[in-house]
Image (cartoon, rainbow, N blue to C red; front, side, top):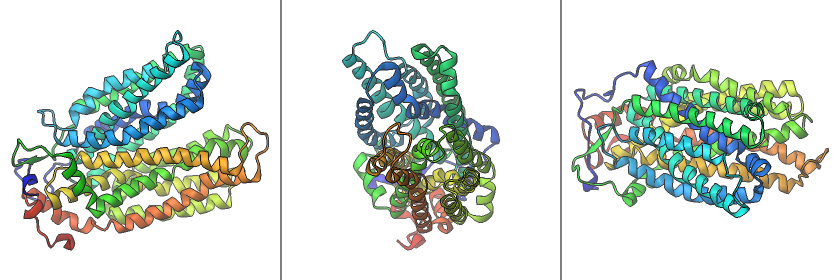
Length: 474
C-alpha cells in the first residue's frame, strides 16, 4: 500500500475539525441539487412506463427489458465513476465539475426521453428510447449523482454538518417527489394531453432538473480533499475495490443502503393498496402524503437530535419508533384513519436514518482512507449508489413477483385472497423485516466513538501504514 499513501489538503489547523462550520446558504445551495436530480430520476421512474405504453405505443414488456439492461450496465458505471472522481484534479475541485457539466445534458436527455418522434416506426422508437435511457441512466445521471452525493464528504469533515447536509438534501428531494406526484398528470392534461402535454411538461421538468444542479455545482465549496504525496500516481480501480471490500464498515454501509431501498416496496405497492384494500385509487395520495410530509418536517430537526445524542443512538431510536409505527399499520391495515396515523409514526421513525445515510457513508470513506491510505471519497459513494440502484430494481421486481405469486388479476373488481395478502406483505410485512435488519446493521456500525481520533490522525497525515493502529484494534 506504500504507493497509495496520501497527505491531507494543506490547512492551518491540526485538529480533526479542520473544516469551518458551513453557512446555511451553502447548505441550501447543496440541498437544492437533489431537488433538481429528482426532476429527472423520479419523473422518469414514475412515468416512463405509462408514457411509453399509452402515448408512444411501446409495450410495457419492452420498456421493462430496456430498464433491466440499462440497470445492469448502470451498476458498473457507478463503480467506474467513483474512481474517475477520485482521479479528477481541477481548480474547481473533484466532484463539483461533474455536477455542473452533466446537469444541462441530463435535463436535455430527460426532455428527449419524453419526446419520442412520432414519425419513427416501432423498431426505431425502441432504439431511440433505449439510446436516450441508456445515456441518462448509465452515463449522465450516474456521473451527476455520484459526484453530487460525494460532495457530502468533500464539503466538510464534521459529522453533525454531514447530517445537516443530508437532512437538507432530502427535504428538497421529498418536496420534489411530492411535486412530481401531485402535478405531473395535471400539467400533461393542462397542456392538451397526449404528446403535446408530455412535451411541455418535460420541458418544464428539464429546466427544474438542470438549473438547481448547476447552481449546486457552481457555488458549493470542496474543503476536505485528500491529495496524493505522489501527484502523478493514479488511484487505480482494482486496489480501490480491494480496500473497500476488505473493510467491514464499508460492507455494512452497502447492506444498509440495500435494506433502505428494499424497504420501499411499500411505495410500489401503495397504488394497489389504495385500489384493492380501500377500493379508491385516490387514497394513494393520502398515503403518500402521510409517508412523505413527516419526513420533510422531521428532517429540519434531525441535525439537532444527532448532535445531542450521537448518530448511531439517534438512528436506532428512530428505527424502534418505525417498528412501532409499522406494527400499528398491521393493526389498522383496513382502517384508513388508523393507517394514516401509523404511517406518520413510521415515517417519523425513519427520518434520522434518511438524514444520516450520507453522513454514514462519508464517515466510512474517512475510515477506509485512514486505514488504507487510498483516496475513496468518490468511490465509496459510487458503490453505495450501485447498492441503491440494485435495491430499487429488486424492489420493483419483488412487488411484481409477489403479485404474480398471489394470483393478482389486472383490473379485477375483486382480487383473490392471495393477491390481497401479497399487497399487504409488500406494503407492511416485508418493510417491517427490512427495518429490523436495518436496526441490526446500524448497531454493528460501532465506529462513532473512534472518529475523533481517526480524524485527528488524518488531519496530521497519519494514514495507511502511518496510522495509529491501536484505534479500532484492527
